[in-house]
Image (tube, rainbow, N blue to C red; front, side, top):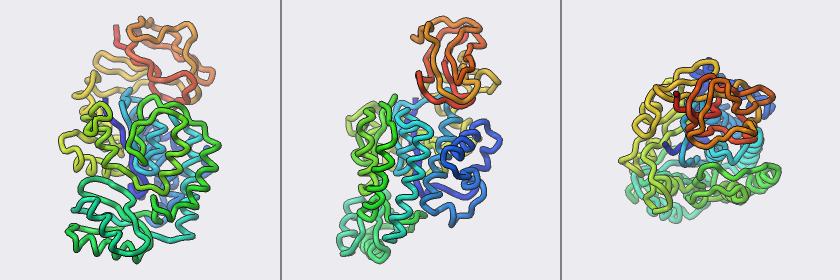
Length: 400
């Protein structure tokens, strides 16, 4: 199975939600709008570039968009073995891992965006990408600039992001060019993120994080701050607060997922869930031999299934029906509606358990989840107490 990665602020683009309007997963946007008390559909469909780039809009739009794509992929029964997200994308990774609930995620990302917007308004700054030289050289350029500028993102061997006061960033960019950089270009964000300029936002974020319930992750999440695997719920208050004022160690995180640092199993398929494909490019610079697939529109789901077919036991595209999704020899029972899933008390969910037509698998918001076909259980795809969406896979069967 693949690793899932999630882009952060700067990946957003006007109209990015339009290809998804008629997809069943669009209901995620409606639920997110209700939870946030904002019209997120408008952010994904209508607002111009300048308005979408505002931090309070960009973060909420990007996070919700990634949740939409997560939902679409879950409907196919495809799950990751590891996840990571770039900046606000880390919240998407936490949601995908089961560590962060839907409504808590919407609330904390909305507040994070507001806090970072306020900090940027109080102390304006910019971010720029330096391409074509290593991070040590970029760090030297920041020091030679003699001002408030720091390395903010270690993106890849080819790309490092700097941030800080505009004049200092410009001087650091010029120094980097003199030291051999190929290109310096602005990032479409509204502040100097992941630098000391975000200390006021960190203090505000801590307050909302104290109200959030984190869960132990079902799969490892590689954190931005230390590029290490985390599954414990207790880790995230500190990690997410520190992330605002610390550089994003993305290259190191991808090396962790790729097994190059000896810290885990090597991933050969990386799936980018969200707007654009910028992370896929970074990953190929770090791990040239791996396969990357970017999913930002429904049409990309075909390519994803083809890639997964060569990487796992799923060998054909899923065809949607109102109670199920079908594979060549696989069946996925899906949720009849949104709500909390509770498995049937007398059902053995071990692999190989025989399932008959009509077997009660559990309940979602008072509605029964019964199997419309017979087979043997290959895995439970929803956990007890998990909030599921309409059409989200509940169980995976091998057909009889």
